[in-house]
Image 1 (cartoon, rainbow, N blue to C red):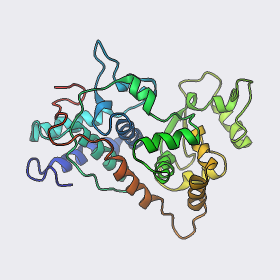
Image 2 (cartoon, one colour; image 1 turned 90 degrees about the vertical axis):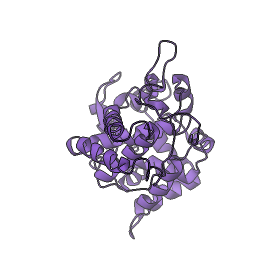
Image 3 (cartoon, rainbow, N blue to C red; image 1 turned 120 degrees about the horizontal axis):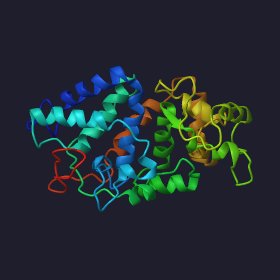
Length: 298
């Protein structure tokens, strides 16, 4: 929103056009790009630290277990290369990631939110911080609330941003404990719909690390409020989805969106929460740097 108006006026359109080249061919990249932005912001703020490669002395965030399934780095690199050709050394990788995530979602008919620009790139990326700060798919409601609160996000932001699970896929390994060994006694998670457990067991055998499952079955390409209908039917894929029914505020929001007949407020709420998330811990002014290549500090 205006930061590059004089220094690189075409930056946002170059980034949007580059994103479109990828999303038009592979629309399923939109969900991983949104997830990458979220994983960036929850570790050291939205500073592009998730994009940095490991060095011989330090494991970077992208090589930590929660980030091994991230994809879409090629879109960020392509956008950076295109922008650098036009305006070298002006536009940060942190801004590019925030803009690409927004543009990718808009290109699959999702909501569009405004992205304030002027973030600078961090110089530190530490895998152990990703492990510590990123909410686990097995998190309970208390852990989720604490995680979001530590980032300055509210309980409403938590339940709204969880709605991003309306698109995308998950590997079986992120939820098979709910199907086969929930308390270590070879049991299933009693909070999950029994019929859904049966369906998932047909797709995911114990120890399966490669199969992927739709997060929002039948609607995983559509950015809509259907996620809340699924969660309300006890068919959320992750424990962290099911956990939204274990708190008065989050449960009320789930039920409101699941039963709304007058048009869901989810898309409007999502844009507001994304703007907040995109401002977590940003570096501005003379902090950080503008990387020449997103995977390396200068």
